[in-house]
Image (cartoon, rainbow, N blue to C red; front, side, top):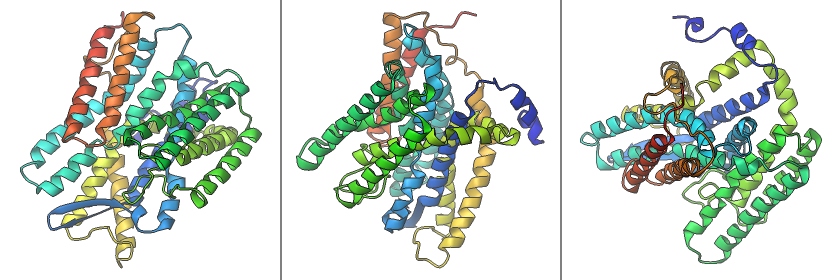
Length: 432
């Protein structure tokens, strides 16, 4: 079967694109996801020792790899692009529950198939694998869903972020969020406070949303964005060199103060820097995206963005397990075959992810019976309850990654599914 039979032709995509579409946002969103997939593939290491599966990454081996997280930690750009794309569709006074339901419909549609796959797989593997091989796999299974949970909560805040209408208000809101994170970190560092306090710093993920609104409304010029990016980068370097923060922007076991879970002031500054650079680069990205072939690849990629994001992890995990079982673990960077294994695994993961993208992408784009079609006619109590239930689902999704599909993670996933089902039932069906 040819590519043209699976996807629309470049000329068809070009002719079907509205003239006012902001192509830079689509490029940034897809580039962020590809960066995450590449980062996971390059950084992941594993080995099997005495019936124990050790899933690790290169960040624990050398500072040079930790420095690479400043390149691969690009998830703030997805929040930036997502809010920039979504804020145009929000109308003050509209039904918040309906607006959020329409976005969650598309986001969660492929997740149901993903969870079904893991449920069947883990039930089948449970009696076959040693406990210390099975449990790490179950823990990794839904690890990537942290992004979905956080993203739903950020989308839920779009009606509030929509109030950013002037450069002054934008600057004040970003500074206030940054200050909150600084205070929470100061408390975490200087007192023996309950660890859960650190999760107040989830406000970090609102900062890219603020930049997304500012970009959409032209509140920050490219020149000023470059100044902001450079200044924030300098502050981040100072926090690492002079302060208590460690280099890696991805959490590792040896970190005393995590930068990712919960987010830290260093990650907040990184988000500001990335989003400011994105605003400065947007005009050039937009010009590049007007090339027909570039735009075609961008639209095809975005049409299966969640498919790409979700399914690369089980495939990456499977590749590692096969290599480990065959006696070729990619674990020690000092091993003589490490580079060869790295290249070979990268090629295998690339091919398998590409095949999965083609095969599973339709699950993301076809309406799902009993799920698609939810509608809340206008603002009011029902709209508020539907929106709140979707926020509960997002929070439960975020919480589940602490355990995966085992232990308390199973309860979190159950709460997520129950909240989604309740929101859909309460929303009712959209009039034909």
